Image (tube, rainbow, N blue to C red; front, side, top):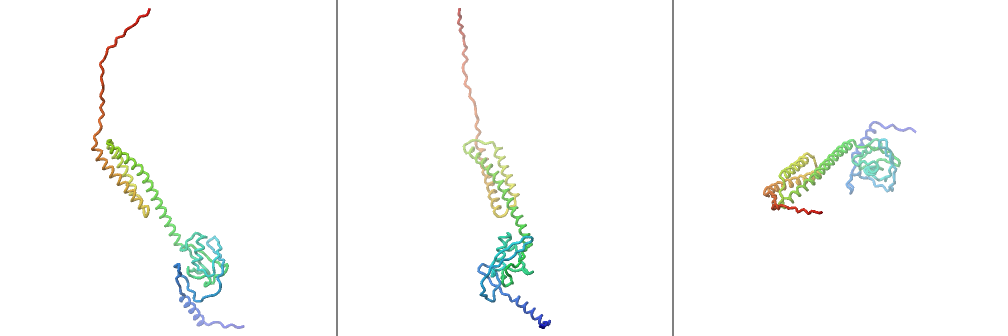
Length: 252
């Protein structure tokens, strides 16, 4: 049998027609929000389960999906196997990266076909940046909690001084001044903490606690100055000296 060799014009026309076919690929939106390839021809063939061989670096996986599934659904299955999120995955089949909305059967995927999984390089950088952000947030929470513990102890001392002054007992002024200085040190520590989100809210809350304690001590200092110190005087009672006379009894 002699076969006719296609001419250059026929090759160019066939390639141009295939290019036009690729450009005219239509897409549709699923109810879940995923953009998928629109099926132009409805097939009555029942869906079959395909076993796909996944190569991810030196690791090998085998998953089972429907023949009518999309590569996006394949990525969801691989997410549970590899721990990579869908947006961190790049799937290559027959040397071409496949989009989430492409159907397996439309791309010629068969049972036990090999699919190559690659982690998106940009996702590695994003994950590293997120790890640094999380570490910074944890350090901020830890530093704020340490300050909060010190403030709990100082607040107890403020309450004790307030109780003493309310009972009319004068407190040494140096005790109040020292306590204010200790509170201001904690305020400086809070200001040096870089915090965002929830940590920023906690930092603001502890700053309000410091301010309230300092204002309370300023008021107590004024009240304490009005209290007159209690002078304790000792009154001695004197007794008249009675000379004692001793009577001796003589025994034979």
